[in-house]
Length: 151
Image (tube, rainbow, N blue to C red; front, side, top):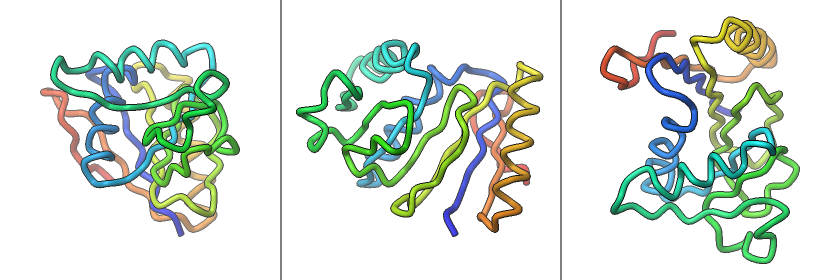
């Protein structure tokens, strides 16, 4: 089964945390699919471009950069069905339902720990994925913004 990591954001927002996780994804030689609410495509795209002055995380957005999808190691969409870059690491944000494609190597679920509804939804997702036999890990931000595995 696919490994699924839940990231409980307590010190930063998903917009701040995602570029760091994507940089690690590219460093590992993997492609990424970012599934988020389409109203936030531009916000995540801007964060990916500007998270560090000397970094460059090439990416594209579904419906806008479709002609370049095959050369974009990071693809932003609102559904894993639009995996135009063959992303192997799938990131879910904004409470989107986790649907794990057969080609996924790892799945990341980022949720806002300061939002009770988001925490409750993440718990439901955890239970559903656990019941389907996925290998789950739980990461929570520490006081310095780093990640500590808790479960």
